Image (cartoon, rainbow, N blue to C red; front, side, top):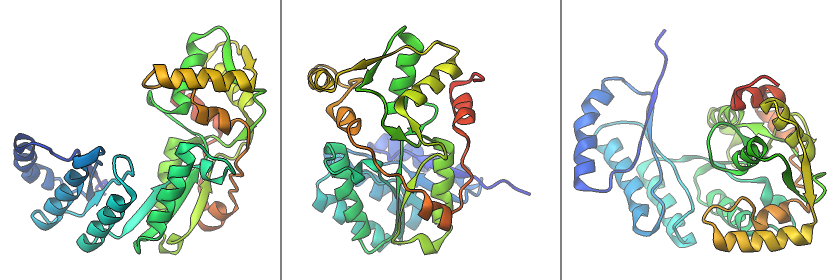
Amino acid sequence: MTTPISLEFFPPKTDEQKATLEAALPKLKALKPEYVSCTFGAGGSTLAYTPETIRHLRDEHGLDAAPHVSCMGGTQAEIRALLEQYKVMGCRRIVAVSTQHVHLPRPGVYGRTKRIADAIFLGSGLDVTVLRPSLVYGAGGQGVFAKIAALAAKLPVIPVVGPGQWHLRPVWVEDLNAVILSALAKPETVGRTYDVGGRERVTYDEMLAAICRTLGKPCRPLHLPIPLCFVLAWFLERLLPNPPLTTENVHGALVEAPCDLSALDRDLKPAITPFAEGLRQTLGRAA
């Protein structure tokens, strides 16, 4: 039995890059990929590169090409126009990965823009399923989990926003990927929104302790007063391009998002990896 494969391309921007992709395509097509995808070029004029590449792959090479879509770098009108282009091309199916922050009564910029994006996708006339994950953890050096794990690995004392008693349902990125694929395979999920999270509902302090156990390090949290955290975040956001603490992080520590898994379990019935095992796979050491 042949294992199905997919291929992913970055959208070429220069004539040289386009020529390189064109020269490689005959060999890549010989692999008979189930589908190909093209990453999203964010930032002003680069919004055009991904749809141009998708159109070329579909029309000129007969590949089932799927675009990545991000709302970064474009206005609401530009994103709506982009989705209309994909509708015309025949790219109708979207799984939009949103966030639990949209549930907060006072979301920060991230939560507010995700709310807008969810509304744009759901109102696009395309076949859309929206997923709203809790904290996603996995390999890689970016994101909230990566920052937390890096602090736990390097510091003898780990700063914590407030009392550290708000709850999360950390979900392993591999499980989130499986949920995305499951949603794509089920037409009945179109038009629906699902919270996605792990089975264990843990406090931030409990999550931090689990990370430290997996790393084989003692866990010494230092709980910082909320007002001080807002001041620190304000300064860090203005001093660093990728600050370890943002005002959005502090707001998120004040109000819990619900992360109700009942709809997810009813429609998709996912197998979710236990948190300890996911951490072991991610951080590479047994708890």
